[in-house]
Length: 397
Ligand code: C5P
Image (tube, rainbow, N blue to C red):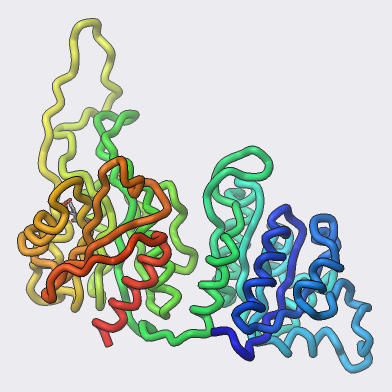
């Protein structure tokens, strides 16, 4: 898959650099040639010897390592690759990229290059969330850099949140997608994702356990195939895919408005777990605890966003895909749901607690369409996303 591709892999200083070693091995397994570059800080985490042994090539560490500086070796090095991959990428290298600084070999190569650049950030959650890093991220994305991850999870520093470098196989998938065909280029695809929060009062709400993982993976996979992605998300655990146009909403009503504003689109995928009901007449003041006096909540039905879009006349997306989270009679319920909603496909899954699917990293889905029910083997949510995005591309071709 990566045969004849040359990757200039820049490792910067972070604990995730150890995953960089595995990344080198896996890139080479797939036929890529890897030219490694280490920053000074990266050398604190992995040794030049192990990196060069795995890459099977000399490691570049210093601007003045380049024997042929008279022939502008750094320019040559920065342009001889098919892709420059920065993994792990620290907050520092992202700041340098955003500013166009060139004070070591890695940053100089990144400034001198006309080769596509992909970055896999890895840093402490506070550093990732810091407005300066988010500003730098937005700048490098605007400059055309593609971003993989970061993932949310436990961090080496003991904290939890977004900032973990993507796993080597996720980075490989992004690299392969970069070199692969982009059948969705020029297509506009809407994805809804995550739960909705329905307020009871200004501090309390009703929600569900959706993490937004499947929707985020799908957004990423659609971007990888070249789509313009409008990602309407409720308050999810998983970060939205970088590169999508993200519209953050809170309630089902807010999601409906964001979806209407995003139309027209070529395809719409409704992966959000939208609350079916909202609290009618939610209080605008915090409800007070009064001993022995329980508030009685009244519910009102939320708009069915999927059904409304699937059943709209003019302006209906060419392909409308719904999800069905079921706990029993999955195929029957999902088939009935497809007919009731009027969508083209339903991606059905069994979210009984024992499946570990809701909030987990894997999914086992059944695709219901005109052609009947097609059972996919249990696979990662990322793989479900890749397969579904490919199907969407085939359908829109
Ligand atoms: O009716 P149910 O919630 O089981 O249907 C699930 C599908 O419908 C999902 O695709 C979900 O995103 C969508 N949906 C919606 N608006 C709602 C409820 C569900 O778009 N109010």
